[in-house]
Length: 275
Image 1 (cartoon, rainbow, N blue to C red):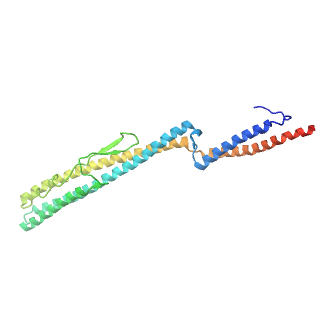
Image 2: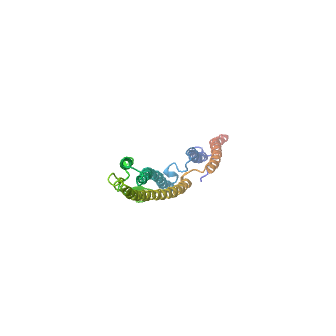
Image 3: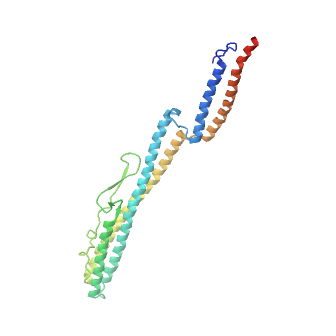
């Protein structure tokens, strides 16, 4: 650092140097105040170019993970809709079995058995209605299509689930399948209904297994997102205690810089004593 000669007044080197350092202090003071105002340590790429790049990538990953968490939630909701319909079908099948058991008793006459068969036919039709009405965002759920859910931020990190097709005919409980005109035919119908109940129970178990796996993925992804958020925070977020300490120091340097500049501007007046 050059030292000026007080007898040379055309260039006040002390004042220039005081001004230069005051400008640096003011600039650094502005940076610290901006960090306190925004809560971010990196507000421009020039603040920390490497940190800015890393933080930007982490932020992109975190936002993608947040969407993946929402995707998992939607997937669980879709499966819950399917589960609700399967539970309704299970209740219908249980009612069917109750009626078939009633018809298998020889205390029932022809009219009573006919009434029971009419009720069984209506219940079978209701099963088909439930299957047809089970949709999520306009997509039929009881289909052979395999549903694919994006469950993380990386390409290809997916989860698949297949609910499968379903109908009263597939369950062998359709109009033509259940006959209760005699005790023997009613007993045969009971066996068919039992098989249908087992089929629905298996589908419910599959849906439950899918939901459980999605719950594990949800918990794991939430923890991973928190860890990435912590990593990004350490790079990009301002440490308020440190920034406030630096701000106090810079405010003092600003005041002393202004005082030094004032003294440096007044120093050349000593030359007047030579006249």
